[in-house]
Structures are given as structure tokens and as C-alpha cells.
Length: 299
Image 1: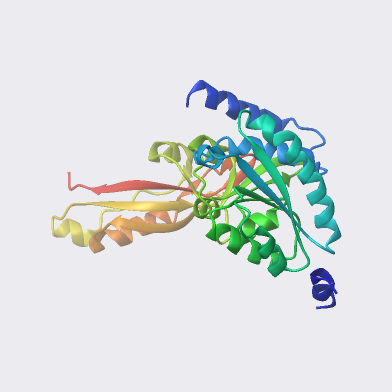
Image 2 (image 1 turned 120 degrees about the horizontal axis):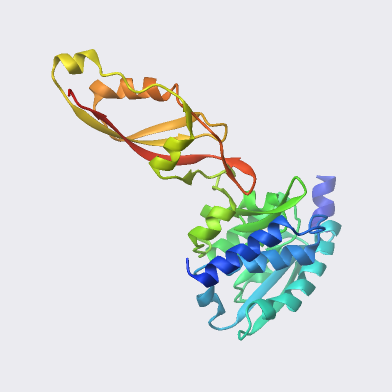
């Protein structure tokens, strides 16, 4: 029996132009979600143009592996379409560079990893697969700094770098920031602002915002009260805190980078009352973080 049966039984203009192009495609691409595998591959390849490490991957030609598990029908269908799409689109997207697409096939995770070995892959596209299979593939690819592209959100949460996912009928970029970094990618800030970013735990990654911008989002909350003991001691202080704001606008976490025990409780009490307007990326509320100073002056 094959593996599946066994488991079943058990800032320059160029950048701005590209940014605008990707956003337009993501916002007005009717019929992409369905899901058209060809359109998915097209958007994935467009996204790779924001990876600063792509020039190194392209230096000796781009080699793309497309994985599917024998006996897993859904994955085999997606892989066949993706393989043809990569062959058609990769050379157009990266003109002037040699591209090669190879099929990675096997009936078990071990066979797939063996088929990958020695191929010298730069990119790996993983079609829908059981989670045990994904884990084997991702471990092998990450150790070789092969950038992994997934066909669905499950793949990105498992440790692939990138996928295009459906959000209320619209395609969105899903980026596993930690996985991408471990696989050798270095995506530009403009791309991170467009993508839904998650961390290695699969949770949405907090997006940095300048304190001024965070302040404009504030809709409720008290200022810290000068502690009585500190005032009597005629003590002043400046505390520095990293604030993580949840998607719903509440303070999720406070980490003091510079503190004074006489004042810390007052800051925490004030922060517990703070509320902010949600911050949206690609139409979805995401967590944000910032660093703020809290100054206590007797005057």
C-alpha cells in the first residue's frame, strides 16, 4: 500500500511599480480563487521579486522542484498543473536566467526526501500533502536553504515560506516570516506590508508602527498617575516599554525595556485601559507593536 493508503487506514520606481502591480492583481483578479493553480503560481513568482536573496538563487540558473505524493489524488492534480505553470511562467518572470522545473515524486516522505537529495533545488513547491509528509519535506528543504512555496495555508503554518490564500473570495499573500528567513529569503519591507505575516507558531506576526501612528489610533485610555511614594521621594524616571496591540485593539503584552519598580505599576494600570482602532493589512486586522517612553517629571 502507498503512504496515503497506509495513513488513511491509519522605494524606487521599479519597486513601487511592482508593488502596485501585485496589489492590483490581488485586489482585482476574478476567478483566481477557485483556485486557479496557474494564477497562484503567477502570484507566487511575482512575490519572489521582492526577495533580496533571489539574485543569488538566480546566479547559476533557477531550479524549481514540484512535489506530490503518490496516491494522494488532490496533491497530484495540483502538482501537475503547477509543474506546467512553472515551466511556462518562470522564464518570463526571470528573463535572461535559465530555469528548470523537476518533478519530485514518491510514495512516502522518505522517498520524497530522497528524490530531493542532490537536485540542487532553489525553490520547492509543495502540493497538498498529509502533515507528516509536509514535516519531512520542510525539514529537508530548510536544512538546504531551499525556499518552500506552499499550495495552501496549512503548508505555510507547517513551515513553508509563502502561499497565496483565499480571504473572503480574494487572494492574499501569506508569509511565514521565520520560515522564510531560515530558508534564506530576505523580503523587502514593502512586501511585508502587503502580506499577512505569521510566525513559527502559526500566529499572525505583529507589525511595527511608529509611536506617533499608534497614538493616532488610540480611542480610549488614561495617562499614568504619578505614584505617591515616588512623589514623596522626589524621584523622577523615564520608562521604555514595548507594547503589543492585539487585532481587536487591546493591549496584548507589555515588555519593559527600561524600568523603575516605583513607576512600573502605574504604567501597567494605565495601559490596561488603553484601546486602539484595529490596524488592517490586506483587509485583515493584525497585531501591531511599538516602543513608547513614559516620562515622570515632578514639574
